[in-house]
Length: 219
Image (cartoon, rainbow, N blue to C red):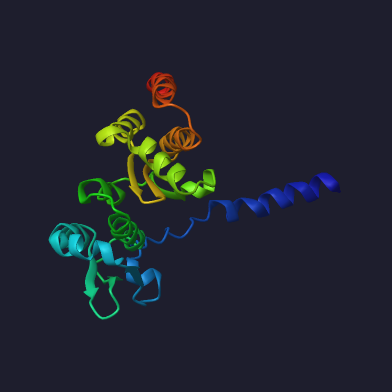
């Protein structure tokens, strides 16, 4: 009985396997404005008073890549003193809006346009900010000397760290901003922290040489 039952079951199963599957539907990729149900997305970036003049001077350098390449609308709200960014139907990717906001924010922090524009082109770049007091509480002349150690004579120390770690550094009073990849930011931050804590520049240079040589081997 059991053998007959299995035989009939097999015979019954065969026609269902031979049935052709329906064709796979082909959908076009969603556009940026369709992903958010047609809603327009905004970003606003505040303009600090000391960056108002540089923003006026380099406005076309900032406006052109954002509007023409990233397909994101940009305007300056003079009343609120904010740069406003907005997606439009032609925006190819929703992430372009955040990239543009990061680019404008990096410029406001003090980075040059050619350096900040790398945030639009490369995905693995970040901006990290910290203050000198986060590393060590310094006051008066001690704080001034620490800032002097970070820059070096004519900015020599800062440029040496930038070139060794492939990062860009902005020292704005007691705030420090670093633009680069995650691993490179860590190396630059460690060097800057050593200088704040009182290490002589020569010692930091030799450590940087070792680290940059290790990085070159890895890649």
